[in-house]
Length: 193
Image (cartoon, rainbow, N blue to C red; front, side, top):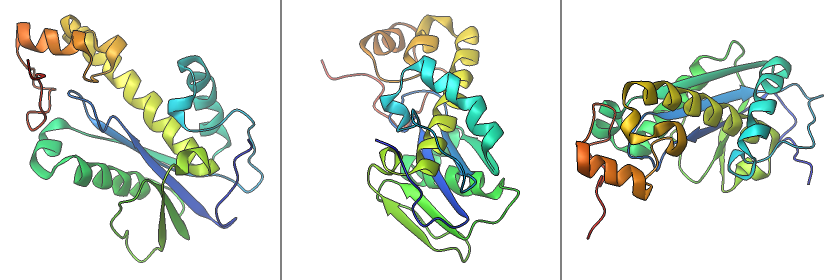
């Protein structure tokens, strides 16, 4: 199914990746696409293979009017909670845009007003609208690359594979080696036995 624009005006889509992870940042992206933008593969990043996301990422960046990508670190997530950290990331990603959007569309059901710009929260927006789908791909690929770098520092957690998500292997490594400075201490790091 071909995705479309929401309002066909100068709109920014925004989304985040890594909300449910035990380690690493939550990464947010915002993007404005030209009205001429079309792509038959682009959809919610969770529905795309890693290969397709990596193929789409440079194309999205090149064809975008402008975009922003921001990592919010675990220390801030622990301080303000994951929802507020996700929204903060989206606001900071919008801050990076070189052009002011006329409208903001957000994946999900929660957002805080950004300056004087109207917004809409759209559940499963990343599988309905081009700019949210594009933001979801940029957030996911940027966060995955970030976790692969962190893996080099702490290979025992296998972040290059699990990207910080709560897999059995990741939890077993936390149990064996303890948490790192990249773990979210406000999250439940170990499963109940």
